[in-house]
Image 1: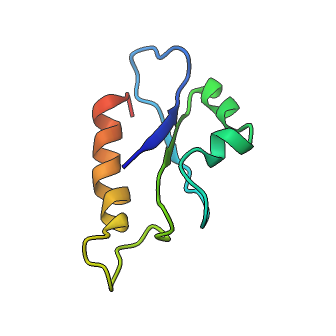
Image 2: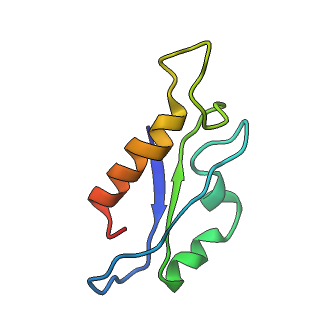
Length: 87
């Protein structure tokens, strides 16, 4: 899955707090950064993560067992972000 990250321009060997921003139905992972000025908060030392959720409501689908968006957000995404960024 794709996601966008807004990070401070400099990080001084410390872990950053992370805020996960979920888009609404019909949107995509670019909505927060394209249609608001939310990325300004990254300048204050916060890591912003904006994942793709399609139209899933970010839950595992009962009728489509392969669509595990809940697991993706809670497990896979967090693990990937912590591996790539000082989260």
